[in-house]
Length: 295
Image (cartoon, rainbow, N blue to C red; front, side, top):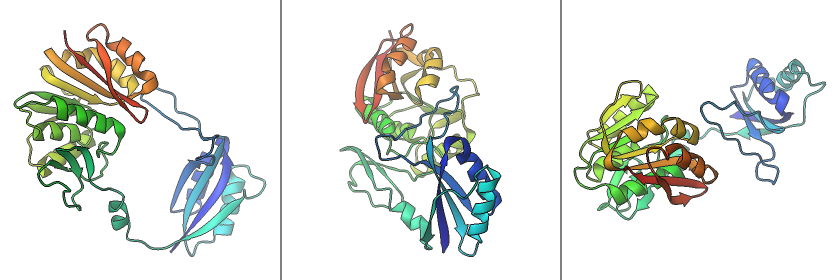
């Protein structure tokens, strides 16, 4: 049994309050938008190279304590440490012991990409045994098949990959796109990521799916060209990588980009214009997939 404490704080003190609560024995602390679910909700997005966004004007600080902790004293000391004259309004909730593994697994069901392509967690049976079923569990690297940008790229691969074709997955994360390309019949498939932990996760996932993929950290030189290049990253790095990604597309080859918001498509199209003409292939839940063929 644990006790969850929820306090309200402004943007200037929410993070300092969370640190103070940890100093006072909290087992964990998180910060949320207190206006979430209302018209005042403020989504936050961040990309490499951007200044970090400030916290919400109305923040909700959630701290988890052991059931035997002296919570009253801990809240008083933490609140005083960040300048509150008294403890902010708070609520308490008992958190019972649960089977967290089972609870987490229950949140991930098989994902249908198309009739012939599914993403299936290891604890589920394949809904369609005759389909191409990629075994993939949630992990530290991005890419479980649930995010709209991943689905947009998987759909493109399902429509575009032909037997023996070469594919580069740039920013491979969990390796889901590279694995899908291989299972769809591609020949040479390579995956690149800036994070060595992601490359390690992708290698494990490739072994689980019994496919061979050449995986490497992006700091290593990669000079060859591919028939298909797919990159599911974010707008700013995609723009910076425009000459490099276009350089990896073979003449007559195709490029697909995602991780781009609907409102950012023209920015990316303009960044790639010197090398390739891109167009919007499909949108899904506010995200877009851009496609092009190398001249």
